Length: 114
Image 1 (cartoon, rainbow, N blue to C red):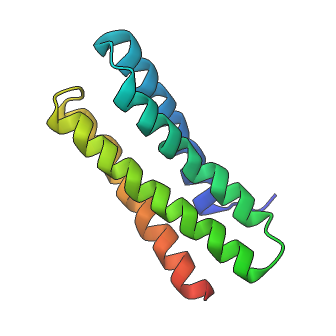
Image 2: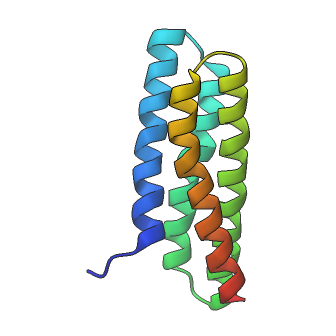
């Protein structure tokens, strides 16, 4: 099967988000913000998968647009978690790089697909 950069990166990112969620639950006893970041952080890849299976170019672009919005929302929750001291600056910077990269890739695909 052909490599798909956004599919692979969004899947890997979702795994990182799941691990972050487990850390927040176990180590920080944080259940509200962690659920938010879990929901949107894993949704990015789910919507990429839906886009790949889209029935039209418009459907493809719409699903990727949802992925992009979810990536932006994930970045918001990651910032909240960092600024409220639930995650360290080092942890935040590491995962933020991946999140912003997903945003850039998704935006680029959306723009070139219209």
